[in-house]
Length: 160
Image: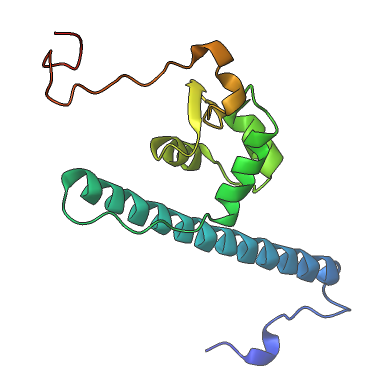
């Protein structure tokens, strides 16, 4: 059995660069903690996404009632704000740069488009859906209401 007195240890006299080694180990530890935190956040995000997809699938299959409308998440609200500033639409990388979450948003944008919160203008290009306003309809485009037949004359309400 080796004698513990003969085991070398790092100290000021025997270990040149021990401080640098210790600092490097602390930096590695901090980087590992950051990676772990990022992985936990990604896992929570994916779990929420999976739950949404399951609800969507159940709704499509008719397995249950549609869930009540939810409040917009802060991320969804930020994406909608960004798209509101660009009526011509933005690409996924442009949205990611503007929102600056550091995470890929392709699946989030696809989900918003699937639920009709945003419109897909092309491959990877998204915008807010066009909602016609009263100014979009020309004044002469309005048609008077058609009179109802009320059972008199022609069965479709026209002249006999």
